[in-house]
Length: 231
Image (cartoon, rainbow, N blue to C red):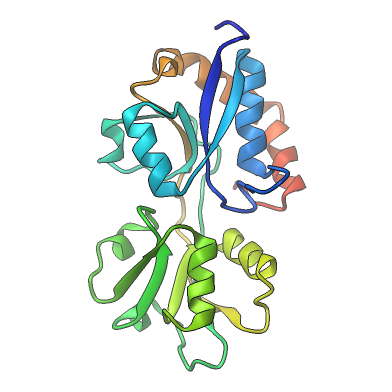
């Protein structure tokens, strides 16, 4: 691939993995930048909600995306990059302090209004469960704002994202994590390539770079920088 070629990479505000601000940063941001550097292409980060980015990935307007859980329906338009760069993803529910809502076990969610990011997948039992009302937001950040305003009873997101969002929005006195967490033995997290992208034919090369970044310790250094856990 010639150095002058540009690959469009999805960027959603999903701190500390992706931080879409004046100075873009985050673990995924550095990972995608490292992939670009090793493969010899320029990268253009395209800001949008997760839902918007998935739509553009399906159409081929975006080439590459990060922070994906495997879903059969997505496999129709995404080529998942193996190996996954993260082997687990802890999901946690957050509630408003003083609301009286307690989530000590999964069944406590029944009947609650739960905020979540639009089109995001969390874990199968929750994704398919209709015993609660799911309120869709453009991002995890917006769902926490909705929780603080009393629009929902709880919010679901990754444990690392929840802690960062509470700090970013100064909600330490208003929002807290529940005691219940969904912590599977393994839940791999992948980068994905649009099947309509020119990168789809270079998946072997991308996977070789990903293995190199893992085996060289580069990913562990990025993870330490942003205080995230890949294992």
